[in-house]
Image (cartoon, rainbow, N blue to C red; front, top):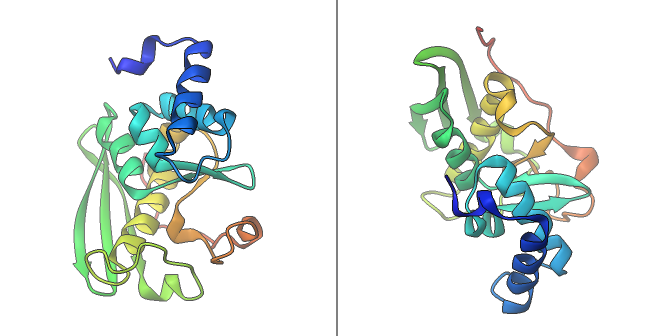
Length: 179
């Protein structure tokens, strides 16, 4: 059980206010925004600090960073993924459900053309963005019940202007998943 599971709505409001007033989270414009991040994180099984650091909302849509999305998959009872292919310009992930392979997701530098990659220079120029994109594709196709809402990862942002990206989400390709 996560420490946040027993909290009431008023507790989330108070925790959101504390997070906002702490100035530790520069992307938090209000206590209500912080509380919304905490509640979304609770629904995904994330710890409060993971939610504050790994979730955001852009144009009313949930944006999950790669670390938080990985944690959601890793903590699930049924799903897992592993990296099966990794190169400077491509990554491949294999997804399993209850130990059985259900799909393979890939992403390459060609998928990132015209895409904002805010996490550059972390283990290579585009490796974090590639992992984000491949992981998001795989979760949508093979683990859709894990998130439960439409979501995006930062590697899918088609503009560096985060206010305009909602019309420009990149189309998702994915190899066929087996049930």
